[in-house]
Amino acid sequence: MSSESQIPIAAKVASRRFAARLAAFYATLFGVTGAQLPFFTVWLKAIGIDATWIGIITAVPPVTRFTVLPMVTAAAERRQMLRGAIIATAFATAFGFALVGTQHQPFLVLAVYALTCCVWTPMVPLTDAYALRGVRQYGLNYGPLRLWGSAAFVVCALICGLLLGYVAAVHLIWIITAVTVLGALVSLTLRPLQRPTAATVPTGSARKLLRDPAFLAIIVASALIQSSHSAYYIFASIAWQQAGLSGLTIAGLWVLGVVAEIVLFALSPRFTLPPATLVVIAALSAVARWTITAQDPPLPVLAVVQLGHGLTFGLTQVGIMGLMMHHVGGHIMARGQGYLAACGGIVASTTSILCGMVYARYGLGAYYMMAAMAGSGGLVMWLARKRFTSHPHSAASGG
Image (cartoon, rainbow, N blue to C red; front, side, top):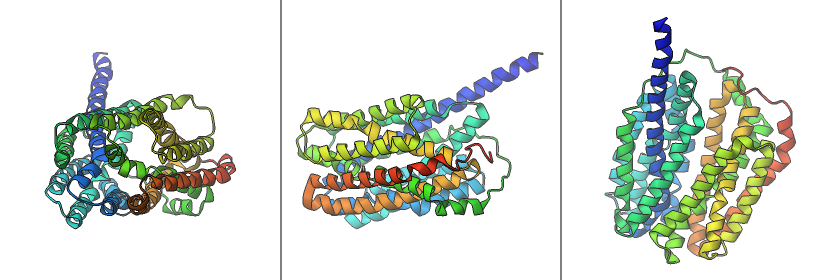
């Protein structure tokens, strides 16, 4: 009797430890993004790299998403070493960013950053895979764990904004590097998970996804709408700095967007509209957001526009994941997510390069191109919306 009563207690303790350590790692993982996304391009500009080269350099992460990333995640899964792969990529990422900070010539920065991204970009899908296995093993919920990542993004963006007033922009890379080092150390605390039993994945059915018009509509619409954020991700901080906004104000604007995203994720279980409709609403919101941003609005209007990030990014994510869950069978979900990431990477990398060229010549006019992309993604989803009411797959099928 006593042993039976002790088992649940031990299980709860193990569950709490897993959750706490994973939440801490998610915090460092997205904390890096909170420091890197708003201020990496500021650092590039500070060391004398022009807008065209900035566009090329920032196109690297999306490229690795559809080239190296699938190979890394597949190899880790085949060898059943997700935790080991997370630790290895975390330490390699920390070393890579430290090496990037020693470079100042455009081509050398590009080369070292490209190698770093080969180990950095797989970290999120590796961690999500590890998290989902742990969620199943310990009976947890994914959302509360993932929210720590978004919260850390906000904190790191604010800290970098504060430090920008005291630290020269040429030293921002070392703040980013420090967060990656912290993440590498935290990765060592991740708990080993039970090894899954060998499963056979029907590759034929996975390949059929790419011949499914409805699935193609999902990944194309997602790629177009999410990639329409490229000009924002790459040049927003630079444009705001040139407009005379302080580092703290810049960080605050980024934080507004992330807070809106967190709120939307928290409220998403209450949404009753079909996922395809949510994606169309997100696309229309993006068209409005980028059109207004192109007008160089005053700070109060810009702050309101930033709140639209919850719709343009968050609602797109919620809608696309809903479509994936209902349209892609559980036994091929990992392959479907890989195709989704690959398509997004191709479109995002191309968009980043074009953004650099357009911004160098037209400045904020690049946002009109973003509005057109978002509108195209919404149109794709609108035309395909009726396909999602027929032949749905059970997300639980196949495990």
